[in-house]
Length: 222
Image (spheres, rainbow, N blue to C red):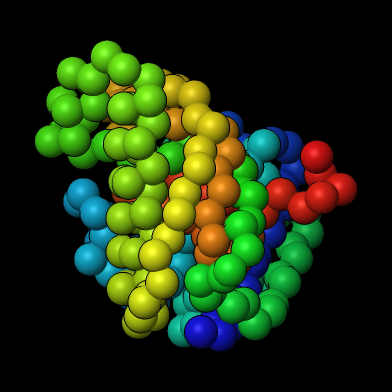
């Protein structure tokens, strides 16, 4: 399936240190007429997939828009002059918007991806199961199955039918994360799957808040 996507990069006068929730809140309040900008918070696996997602990667704010979300980003980008995030005000010194048609489709070959932001994989139920596991191989298989489920949920939210079995290999590390002041366990690292995913798409829980952002690893990146 071919999707229209847009990645809006906001270059600020200094690196942004506030959490993504503040960026999301500010943009949503600035443009209240655009409901896609304040998509409801996901709970557990996604039943829909956010058409606008917020990211802060190495201090740089990003927004990604998909289909109608891409149109929204193009309409509002010129009006974003500054970011008021809590007590901090950042001047937007320049903006860059990259548009492209992105294909999301199962493949016969395997693609390698890296999590640019921690993957929010576990809900309350499967967190307990994960913590009870002692065998590393069992944990790895458990996470791989969750990752496949996340990918299928993403496809369902985008109206994509997947008739091919997805095979995942992963190389992940646990990392403590925080969401709205509450600590959770997230994961960083890399994974391989027979599926083509556009760069900067989010996978897992709370992707509209920047979690689970991926980027394909090209041969020259290794």
